[in-house]
Image (cartoon, rainbow, N blue to C red; front, side):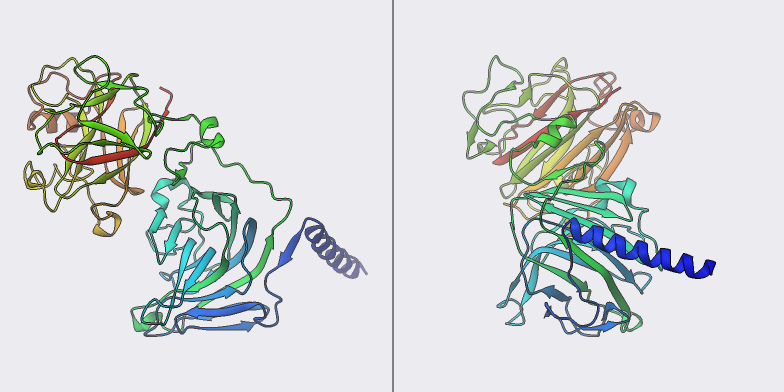
Length: 457
């Protein structure tokens, strides 16, 4: 009798929960019986229905394959559970995505933002990848606190919010990625079976179940303030970013907040501001001989600085920090420098030691460890980021990937300074605060979306 009562109570709770979900506007995207409302696009992997779940299996010699909704969705909250059989397999959940039937010689390709499922040691599950287009827009190095959320050998629960320009992801309840992007106001939802390149991965299952969506009465879920927001709308800071302490250093329209590093006011020549971009005008590559460097009017100590930059072929520039303007120099003002450089065509890339003058390096001190796939081509926008923590730990990022770190004032740092071009300046790079600087190296380089968040000491 007791067992019956418990069973009845459990059944009642399930029915009550289902009714509650329905009242809140949730809809099942999968009926548990067949693939009605879905269609396959891309590769040749097969999708079947087994035990009330959608099962995809990897196949040899196939591109990425997607099972996508026939219906398109705009704003929504999506939840589902996914199991990836292969210990180092890969999958993903497409959002607001599209299909190009002409790609790959008429085979077509799916493109759009994807919530990544990545069981590999890289641990980027919950990151956001732009399938078939821009590639990584939120690598999970931007939020290391979420890298342990994925559980191997188990179903993992995913929550995805797409509301307006905002996309957020959660893995097993852990906040993972936060992207603001004006592309794709609507599109289909898709389930990915990734291509495989070894025979051991052929036939491995990816299982999707409990797929539900809500499209009305949506309320966005707050993210912790410490999680970085990848805002891909130029020169934009949202209300949530402002609440978290972010502010624009360049308003996209004027030189407000900036001045010449060595003269009164803003340079009258050598720089231009138009179409939301502030640019160095080409002047033959001479350092600080045209308009000269510009610096922020304010000084900063611990901070998170993000900026976009675009290089002309063979161009050179730099973003410097802890610039005091106290050092005497004939050329550019002195400071710690995030190198901005065309590594292929500019000779500076071959100077210094072991590549420590290449793109995103701490100039003449520490080499940036970069992979080519995370470097945008010349003429495209790259995203740089410099984080200076209150304990003097510093990190450089390029397009969301951390490329170096060091401790200001440490013995290791001082030892590097002692064998660098900065050896002549006492306590180089150790000031408590300083200006942010954009360098005029006489080459055409553009900047936008320059924003900063002060970090508490």
